[in-house]
Length: 262
Image 1 (tube, rainbow, N blue to C red):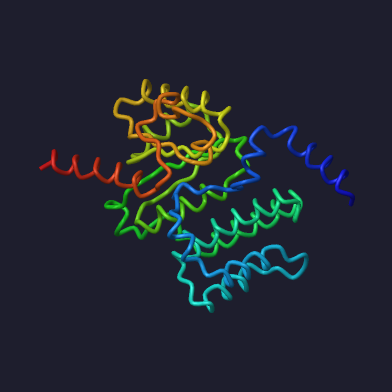
Image 2: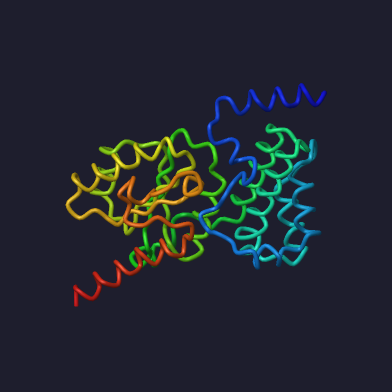
């Protein structure tokens, strides 16, 4: 393929995706932000090995890839919090410099997400621990295609001990009904498209008006780097790139309720 043809194809890819230019530089940004010190701690050889594996044209096996990462003395937490996000960022840089196509980025990212499936803790804890578990409802938007970050966040929340239920593309009435019928400590919206913020704002407003004691609502995701004043725009109680902050929000609520109950 010539450079001109490559550029033409890239222009076509970008035409229908207003956020694609940002995707090129960051690809997937997880809800858990990373410092420069954390990135420096990445073992380059293991990161490169992961990138090579998830770009295999044939013979890819997520179980074998995960076993290789573990054989490289990487802990599950390191794989989820550092290596998968860094691999996604590297893929974005490669796409931006015309080293790989957008289709290759998509396939490789899907494979990174598949690794999360192998690592993730089941969403429902043991029955004996259910009563004490923090319960979170993660709401993903129907038109959101960048879901690796939200899946990383879900894995991190479950590791913290939360029970996380995932809801794809819902309306305010359905969400309000779920919150009324089932007790949640936190509603968490993940969003990667700033055009969806108005919809999330309406949902948040409606849930508060329909539910007598609505749980706190947090918002995170790629959109935090695409739009300003997200908290003011949506009315969310918390806007954060760190799932631990969101977890503490609902955990504090539970502690307050326990204190009042005594």
